[in-house]
Image 1 (cartoon, rainbow, N blue to C red):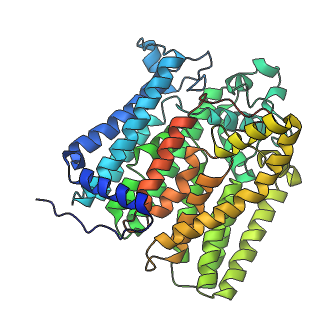
Image 2: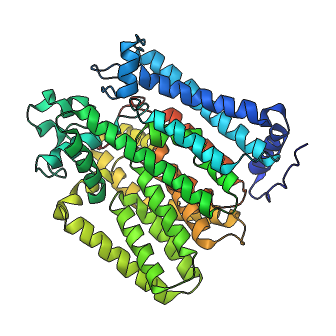
Image 3: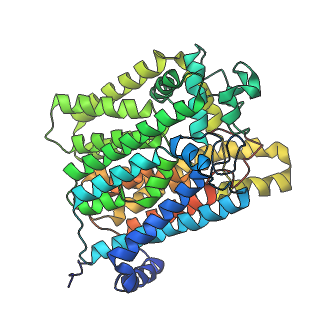
Length: 479
């Protein structure tokens, strides 16, 4: 009979206590058995994959970009049905819900003593990912924008000033045609390293956008499995770590089936965190700086990883290490940004920083201000958000940090708290943004933040798979 592991210390208010009691009851129920947990997770993944297999190319869909990857093309030849948008939305909702509940059930089973072989788990997930990267991305069309930016760069244009709609042929260009109409006039907001990966894929794909997207999917899947391998080798509890990352159906849906760049950021963040826990040396600090700088050159949000590492070094009063790491990271960022497409890389970020997503408390505030003071006040109130949300994020991060045991490594706890708070507070937040918080959480012992991160990611996933909500027109879109 499996032995139930000790519950983590409970902190927080009355809501936390009540939720903790409910979870303890559920974790002792038949729901906390491995077979139904894995089955439900598999059904969730299969549902999202089925949406990808039934992609409606060449017509755009609300849940898939209009391209046919190898297994989707095979399914089409075998007579797979074409899902109407409403049915695709419903299937995505149900599948994501299955993924959320399946993840919770697997973690409950683990808390009762279920310890599958981590190596076999990673090998199984690698095989699943190997299949999924051959299916049309489902739940997000961002990867179509990645492909278009890669094509722009391959043709010798600057993807930070040149938009997909400006490609030869305009809207009839094969690359422009697969980009959502929302983003066709938007330049890239991603870092130069991200654009180089897009360029590599587009160079291989040439005039065939489906090949470019296929290469991007394969690269993303490889990064996802590589992250799982690093966790396998470095986590104190590799079973729990892989359940939170590699076998996490929410992460597979958002990162692998969505093909998102955040997978690469999570990998670099993990290696930087692991390296920061090694015996201090000049070369370790240089390595950490290079890793963090490269991550920031993929997505600017990786700056929260840098802050997490800085908090740890300040906590340890390691001023020399902090200076060395900061100088190397800053030099890496400057070199990668300025030696690629120059300062034009930074220009789209200014517009992106004013984005507000629907639904959110920030968007509700905009609506109320617009109705009371008119549309002219929208830009002013949005500018105020830029000062308010970072302060709220720091306050929430401090609260989350103090909920963790003082015995856990500061660098892991700080990174997890900062990135989790960012996902909750930022005016523009999407489910795949939680990837860094998940990879940091996988390095921590059992704690009550797991349930809240799972709930946050699940809610964001249900609200924000592609096509669910209109973009705020008063600010302007970005992928």
